Length: 113
Length: 112
Image (cartoon, helix red, strand yellow):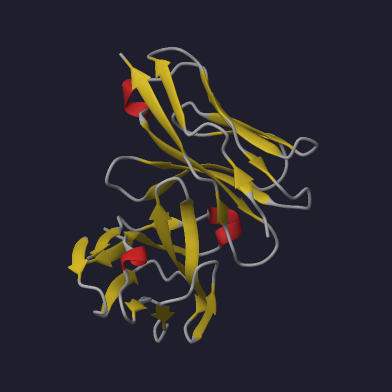
């Protein structure tokens, strides 16, 4: 089915390790974003992209990198994992965020020990 | 930056009773407004949205929300809740630009 696919669903990292959270959508959406969800803090924007080759920082970008080489994929890289990055990460995409809002993936639960 | 306030972190309500989930936002300039629902261990799903026109918007499952510009509010209501409505509800605001701003969420628990 069409939608936003995130992998992995669960991940445990040791402090200092790096990893990439994968996000892919097959709806030809130009707009893609990464959010983290923490208890009592709602969703906070990490990075977003308005099209292939174009990315920008959100509210909490430190410690994360992104790239957008294709319309379909928007991976999120943790450069050197820290316990503060323990969170649930959501990827979202939209054809037009004003008119349609977001389509969200099912999330990646990351624990950094 | 825009801020979104959901005053109630948890709302317990009996089945078939009415419910209101409150949402206020900081800016009075032109914004788009959204409510999302998150069921356990799932991503967020769009419930309803206000873009322009009628200030009362409805979802397919009986929820409605009213945009009040003077009070900068977008409260979500349902006249009679069901067990299946138990979920986390997020209010979101999109001002001009490319960013959404989400509230901290309200956990709705429907009690049989």
